[in-house]
Amino acid sequence: MYLEQQLQKLTDAVTQLILVIESQRLPVAQLPIVEQVVTVPVFAAPAPVAPVVNVPSPPVFAAPAPVTPAAVMPPPPVFAAPAPVAPVVNVPSPPVFAAPAPVTPAAVMPPPPVFAAPAPVAPVVNVPFTDGKGLIDYVMKSYSEMGTEKGAGIGNVLNQLGYKNINDVKPEHYAALFAGIEGLK
Image 1 (cartoon, one colour):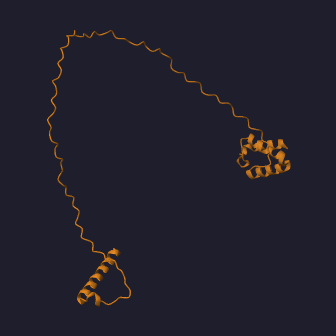
Image 2 (cartoon, helix red, strand yellow):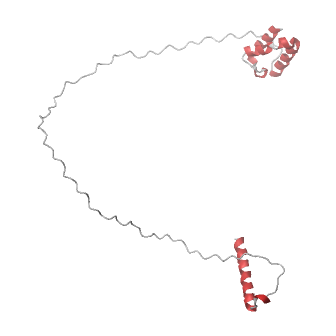
Image 3 (cartoon, helix red, strand yellow):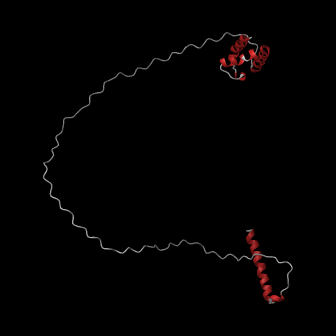
């Protein structure tokens, strides 16, 4: 919308300028000299656009091809009549039955599985820790007491219990870890 307004203003200014020039009707040589030339592009007002109406155009058909006479075909060949054939009599054959499938007894359900009793719980050993922080403090103290060579065995004890990280040890395995570390000392 802004551009349309600017275009309208410019068009009005050009129209006014043309009227002034025509009213003075000075020859080109008598026109005043302008020190600075400003080039302003002149745009023609947009032409009115007719509404688009879809009018179906009449169908266009191709001109028919010229008709050329067809080539004359030779007459079809004549064949001798076939020899008479005796009629086929359909004699029913006796029905054939498949042998009955052997009857097998229904599958017997296997007996329910027998589960082994759970492994006996290790006897409760008095461990000097009851939580993760106490466990880490105990392991660090034991490592420093044993030195680096024996302390490396703590990793083996963890692996035997199925752990890779000391932080992952569950409370039910505290006693086994404690017994394993004490066995290294």
